[in-house]
Image 1 (spheres, helix red, strand yellow):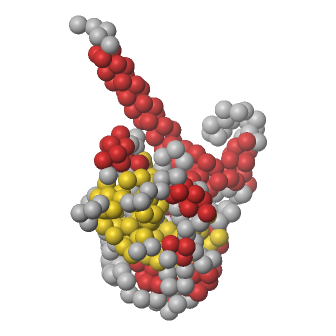
Image 2 (cartoon, rainbow, N blue to C red; image 1 turned 90 degrees about the vertical axis):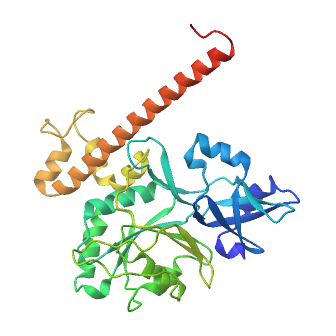
Image 3 (cartoon, one colour; image 1 turned 30 degrees about the vertical axis):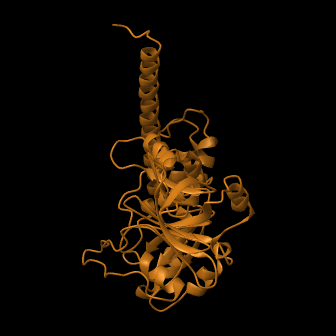
Length: 350
């Protein structure tokens, strides 16, 4: 069973290092209010967090189990199951936490394809596509853009070309879950046992897409609002095995996605802008009219859109702010650690 949803020799070797008579390997398929549903060879089981893992999560929220994780579950004589250890993550989709915290939030783990799901109607907002593609690149998975609801528009191919320019190096496919166009080709990308994660805002067809891939109405769907904004349908992240092998991981609609430590993903998303910036005469060029600025020249010649340049600038500034908050948190934690150490050794000042 587990081989069909991605179990490979690397996961098996990692599990063998923590093997015990009362421990079994499984994959997290859902997390709901601290209760974790794990799929093992014996079927699904519900587990709470073991004591050691609870301590790690308290220190670092990214250590919390998330959908897609491979894990070791301990079986107790009284019938309880506890999740004792997460195995190393091969890939992870991580966004900045809400508010001004510097910790990240792991949306899902161990996915092979991170699909940015965007509806063709209303017209996609390219800056939002770029943000999600950067998130997908940074995860370590293979990015993909899936344009849904192709049956509602007559210019799907033209829109796909525009989206391709905003996501260089990323495949862009158009599908319709309602009439089935493109579904077989998307399913074929899973190569038997790969995991596809669906990332995107509410109302853009992620749940409908999952139902079409599975071939059954597993998740509820709701009509889009009259103002074009999405309605939340999925309220939790859930991994669903496909009948022919592989799995699809649905996520709740992402209203806002903050990038965190995603310089690599941003570079891959804006490789054209980075290449232009590298050719500027001055290494610290701000692209604001300096002589020898290749970025400004490309905008003037029409080779780079002003919209794409401004999107690049905005995300660069966001990453710098996130890095600054992370540095401030680390300084505070070091200061607190120094005070605790001083108190333990009796060297604290009165």
